[in-house]
Length: 180
Image (cartoon, rainbow, N blue to C red; front, side):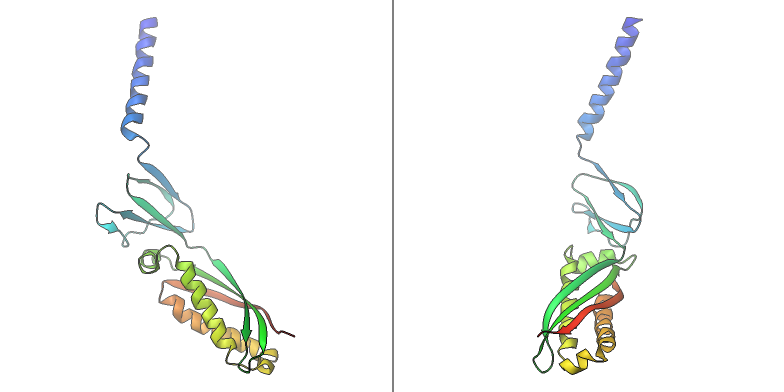
């Protein structure tokens, strides 16, 4: 009886050792959460696979490969800027945008802009705000132009973000006032 238990324990220990030795922690499992999209990068086997997006679930990733995951959930960026109107008067401006990566297009986004795509969004966002605010006088900004300014910023950003696989959900002007 003791020999049988000893043999059983030895076999189990050998199996555990074999699994640990051959696996060596080299393969990993990556879980993609709801609202995320992943793409496999296989440097030894064709590179980045943009045609096969992976969605919610757990995936095995071989040694040397990488599963690149992007969130498709809406994200916000806020810009706090000090800008000049068309006649040189300074204004404090706070604008916030709400955007998301288009489903099925995160792979193209990765190939065209890389992981730092938010820098692109921020640059386009601030550029749109500056160009729109700079077209109006302080009087126009203070009166009825804030709705028009919001629409103009939105129209510029929709075009810019759309061509980079992003969708603009909302533009909100939080503060728009002349400095004393």
